[in-house]
Length: 279
Ligand SMILES: Nc1nc(=O)c2c([nH]1)NC[C@@H]1CN(c3ccc(C(=O)N[C@@H](CCC(=O)O)C(=O)O)cc3)CN21
Ligand SMILES: CC(C)C(=O)C(=O)O
Ligand SMILES: [Mg+2]
Image 1 (cartoon, rainbow, N blue to C red):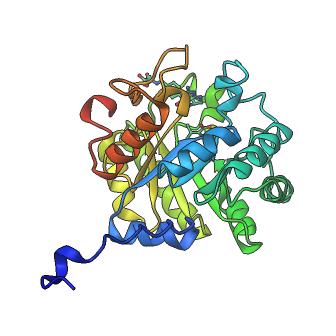
Image 2: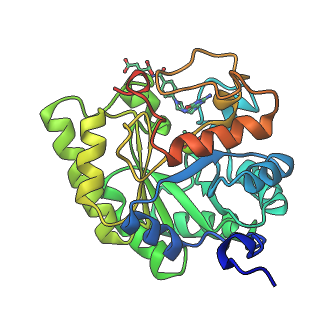
């Protein structure tokens, strides 16, 4: 028996990470721990991201653009989302599986419920819908029936034809007020997560401070509770024009695992997003 205790105690084998749950996300928000999320569309990448510590895997309707080659997310169907959600769920162990409700699948609360049930049966743990305070009744109905909801506000790509392009939102006083009002209404209706896309960093911070549920930002500044990127942007394989909030994490790495781990580390230590990624 060695005389000096501390140095001879064997390093414990790290416990397997606990599955990421809705209460676990709330606890991270309360503790100020950053949340790392990525889009994911298949089982192989789900397995890779899960083992690299990504906490939320988003089956984004961006798959219509990055996988299928459309120029918007509008052509994506519930059947497309079910196929990719089931694929991701098979590859995942610990992460929370979040599925986008595609364009046209939540026109009223009952249609939203029917669509969400299909995604939950496919393996989603939470669904995401785009829109503001007008969606409160839909959020309430889903949450009351056991379907956790992420509310997506700011730049909502399903509204591209109304927004006139993929443009930064909440830049005017009126726009910022509307966004804050939407965030509060959606949280009050039961949203477990609020996703902020392409809004000024100061507004991302304000909304995050106003809410008790976590915010996940994409082009919404460093003060959100967590961050998300489209995996093709993180890996530098998307051929289109890249948004200001994108960082290619393959730079300086020699494997996809290393790039994903660098992303998780940069989100956790607050070094991503940097000022050049913010509006
Ligand atoms: N590969 C990819 N990455 C994404 O982040 C993404 C998709 N696809 N498809 C669905 C939506 C579309 N998104 C986009 C696409 C482009 C910009 C963009 O270029 N924004 C300009 C702002 C221009 C302005 O406000 O005038 C930028 O400079 O970042 C932003 C979000 C986000 N989502
Ligand atoms: C960009 C993220 C937030 C998304 O909704 C998607 O990938 O579809
Ligand atoms: Mg989406």
